[in-house]
Length: 212
Image (tube, rainbow, N blue to C red; front, side, top):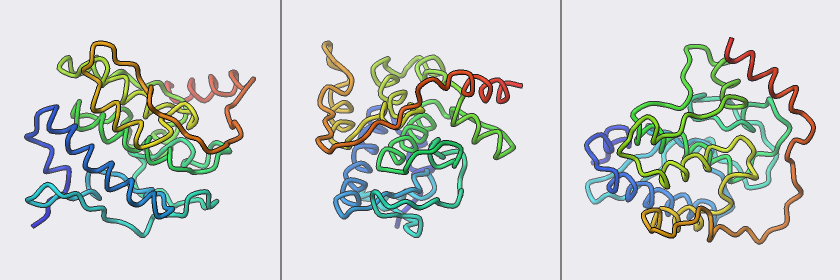
């Protein structure tokens, strides 16, 4: 008695969609606590039962956290930039957060941030093309919620949310008058920055190729 999230979210209001995302994040958090990255967040691989419990399918794609492993591209619509193989960056938990951003964008706007009939073009968009803010597409989306989705969709993994608890906190408080994004998003583990410096020309060249 389970249905895919693609079907489940169709008739939900914004706050109900947020509650679904929260339940999914708690399920994903359980997977992370066991040391795994899901690598397969889509509206087709997340299922919900009649009691609103969330289930993850397609677990063959999971990898150990910090394990260097290039995954096969199953659904380029949800692909994080680092999964593309176009940039030299290890796949970590934040790759799942990018895919979550794609999913949230889709269920809130009824469209994907990037769409193309050609996988290579779609991958290039994930790496280099800017995202249209969700609230610019659907005016019913609060600006703070739109900002949360945009933070999940940052190109550089280190600019995204660092923890599920940080995402959950913002989803609980985005309607607060004094809301400050990622104010409770703390990652205490040590990481060396992988941010690209002095590569603006190369990024602009790739961006130009996408637009053409």
